[in-house]
Image 1 (cartoon, rainbow, N blue to C red):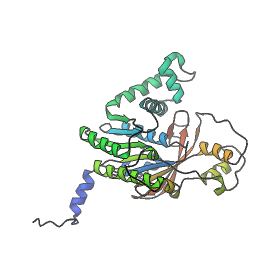
Image 2 (image 1 turned 180 degrees about the vertical axis):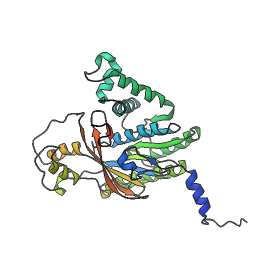
Image 3 (image 1 turned 90 degrees about the vertical axis):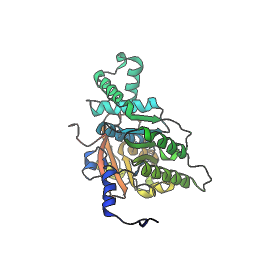
Length: 333
């Protein structure tokens, strides 16, 4: 019989595990990185937001940053809404702004790819798109995009375990998004339980693979009835911004959808421009034409659950046309 006691506590052994399992992955936005907010190996990270607030945009910004920062790692994306062609265009749009002057919209990229340089909108530099395409091509062997909307979470986990031994360094797995993933086979009393079981499977996979799993998640609406009277003004007015800030996602907003208990880190996102339109529509005020604008607008990432550290809110900037999320002033304008 072995003399070792099952579960015996070994400080040296645990230190070796910590050293060997890899480092925390920063998200690439200075204001979050300075607070040591990132993803640890084995973490389930949930990016939570309301419809139209940019959950997928955050996923793609994070994916682009990690592909750039960790050239020896491979990343797997399970997309339940966007086919690989759309994923490619979204990444190209982000890269044109990240390394360019203006930033190409999804439509700008699509038209140029379909019709060549002759269909480029005035003010855009073709060289910026060509550079983005070249960068994306350099990532081809390190990026796996799986578009199988009918797969359940068991299929997702099985596929990851099958390909993991063939990948020298698996950096992370992305799932977009949590509520669209079919749960494990069985009967469930509620949709929230379905999502909770799905999240539990993703968390177990993160631990077994030794890498972060990042999943976007839909949260229920926050009605203006809970936020007080809507002030009159534009998105630039402080009173309007302060009002929208009251609608920041909280952890309990995710409870109806399930999955928050399994997560190690939950990031709640607030898109001020999207909410500016939403609150006016909810209140029955005059309709404002929605249009995709390249202008920078306030965007927040709130750490609303963190098993490894502090909570807090970080102000960022979203450029809607390109989908590039950046630190304020990072481009000097």
